[in-house]
Image (cartoon, rainbow over all chains, first blue to last red; front, side, top):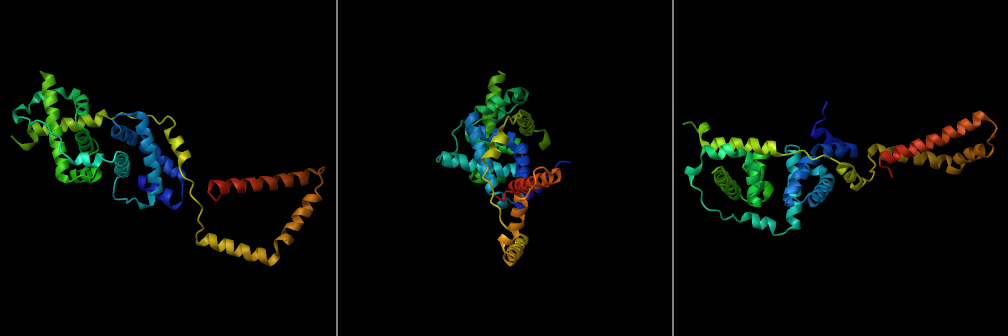
Length: 178
Length: 111
């Protein structure tokens, strides 16, 4: 039977059981490394170093983890803060909205959906804040307020990043379908 | 047209589905093992029971005096007959017990 995250965290905190923490690491290493690699612009080695740093910080602060949050989201938050402190200006940059040309709603057609197989390639062409915002909300299923809180930006900015990201995606997919 | 049928909603659904499917699993390949080596060892902290056990043990030790307790062990070791299989077995069992106790203490991060 699969032991819940909550139980593993309690064991790691109360019994100082490193094996329980190792279980959590095995469970979340892939997700966190993927996230960290994205934060490091796809650099696998740098991303893995960041992921190790995140797990070590998480281990030290495990007692402060509130069980109502998802453990993965908590890890993402630590990763984001670690990355932001490494590249100090990043958090500020992410508050500024990217200038993208306004997209005509009439182009919001089925053609864009048909070309969804190119979606990943198109997502990678988006600005970093747009990618992160879209992935948090659509891939990780976070609410807008959770994603905004994780990215340390106002809710309005998060929504703008998402809307502009989606507009840009539709534009790219529509252009490629022609 | 209901809201569920709008192109925007369809696009959102496709986006969600595609992004969900796009995340590939990264094999561990020693990542977790390397990480566990880097974790800081947690220091053993005595709980209430621990302090109680240490206090009682100290009192007993002080009452009997440590040399008085160790002297019989030393005398027994000095008088150990290497030709006696039983005594050799007892000595090996004692050494094994000490190693097991040390290993267990290590596992519990006592030192």
